Image (cartoon, rainbow, N blue to C red; front, side, top):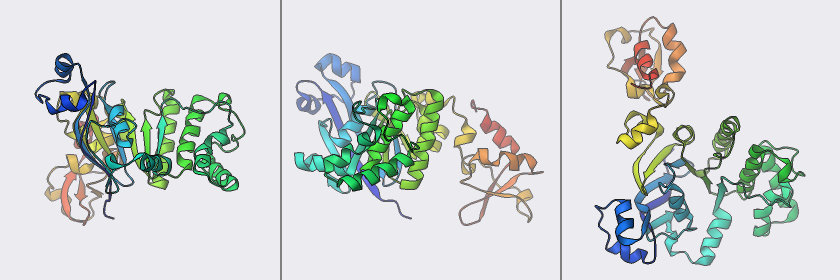
Length: 343
């Protein structure tokens, strides 16, 4: 199936200060963010960022606090107005949208889930979920059916008549997710949605969202400062520093080929064998694997899925591509090397 581009960001800038356009026009691109602030009293929030997001993928924007990730994502919805650049959704540059068009975009095509759940404390869970449907003017019976459906989807069957205060933090975040899903948006934006949760609950919510995404195939933008969360959630990851994107790639690309020390620090503690595929680490096929009866694996198989097979095999496994052609081999020594995160 061919990929369809959903969102394109071209040369997005956001400069905070009294005269952002003039500052950008006269900007010395060789200066650091700190030097620009010192010389102009303006702050670069987003620095000339460009990327594309495919329909149905989860695109993660990650970086440390102050890296510009939340500012960038708010520029995509124009909750923050970019100083310059294009934000193209389904072929339309939303920088040209008027207020009515922006309202329609946010109400019908896009939903956001934040770290702080933002639930209405005086409304029951089911009423929190139907809020967006009320705003749309959906029939009462129809919106109740939809709200109940998404309540079940996020694992909160039977909790509709409770108030948010009666729910744990993880359950409240499920309500926030259900409220976003209820309006059936094309685009879901998550701003560090799980960072306030305990580690166990956080992993549970990550797994829940992955499961929902596998079913619904929404276009998701997910902000995090946690690289392990980024590689778990993302089809592609954009890593930011000082307002700029320093690397974009699949989790495997970034773990295998960090572009600089900043990115390399994020990848140091990652279990490489859980991220890397066979095609990244295989060696040239030897005569041993060219005969019949040799166990085979694919270039796209993850290393951790092959540990038992490689351990039980008397020799290397033959590696084949998508056409079934022999392209290499892999054995226990290669996987053991990958399992050493320092390798």
